[in-house]
Image 1 (cartoon, rainbow, N blue to C red):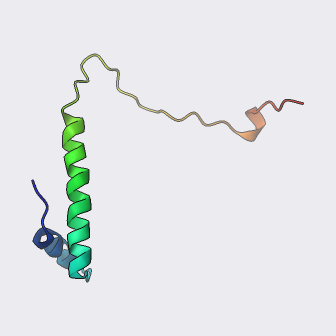
Image 2: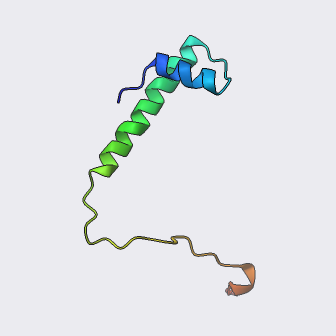
Amino acid sequence: MKLTAQYIESMAKLSRLELTEMEKNAYAKELDEVFRYIDKLQQVNTDGVQPTDFIHVIQTIRDRKDEK
């Protein structure tokens, strides 16, 4: 789906945003690039890849061992 300035205008209206023509065109271009990238990611073969539930390890200051 190619995003157009008209589509952005209708979304802006629903969101009660006032955008200039330049903003509509810029958002249409940026969002179109994002959605094309998402389409590309959906084509990646992930067979055999374990789902990741949590990827960030939290370490508190108490757990940190400072080197002297």
